[in-house]
Image 1 (tube, rainbow, N blue to C red):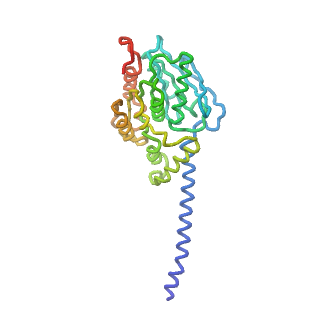
Image 2: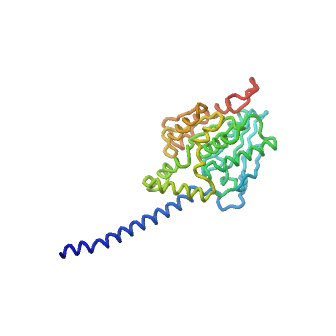
Image 3: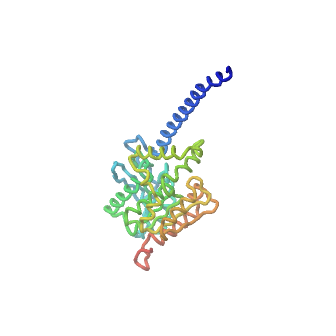
Length: 317
């Protein structure tokens, strides 16, 4: 009887300890949720009402700014003009939390092949204002407005194409889905959708992220959308590539753990025969973005599908 009483008396303590543990777990999950949403949604230039222009290299033909929105933002761009009439105009888009300075070399390579290169700081990056990242939802609309303004000032010669690195590749594909002026896109190491890329991002960048439940990751994505005022489900590059008529080259490292190779396969499957997939065996995310082989493949593709061929006088498709 005494033993039974002692055992019975321990149950309230066990339930109390379980309730405390559950409460601590929920508190930790809540903090992870808030911190994760801010990390996912906060742009590098968050909190800056005015963003200083970046100092352009000496060989930039012109530096310009364009007002876009809503919500209002100012985009900064550098233009590299070829010596003769441009054979086409290529928007060059950087990766997440980077800026156009990272792609100056690629812009020069386009210029040297007779194309006008327009290097753009996406909303909230580099010399552009903006508070939130929307993973292509607002950024693609910004770029469509930028194309309008480039056209109005005579800086949109020939066919329009896009080169995008990682985050910029997703923006480029979403732009092509809403703006028929885009004839060709090269997208390197790009995600298929925001929801699909958050789990590997959490595994790669967050301690213990590989063990976060899917429900918590979904809450983080939903909260990031609420902070930025956009629908996370609209940040779907796979759906965008299925809607565009542009020719598309996908470049991806086979050993990418940040944006796994399956994202490229998913985009390729959605493309309906208008995509080519250039795989880089042994390359991880950074390696693919820095690969000379990838750059040369991108340049050849843009020359073929994003320029006017002098001999034919029309768009090479």
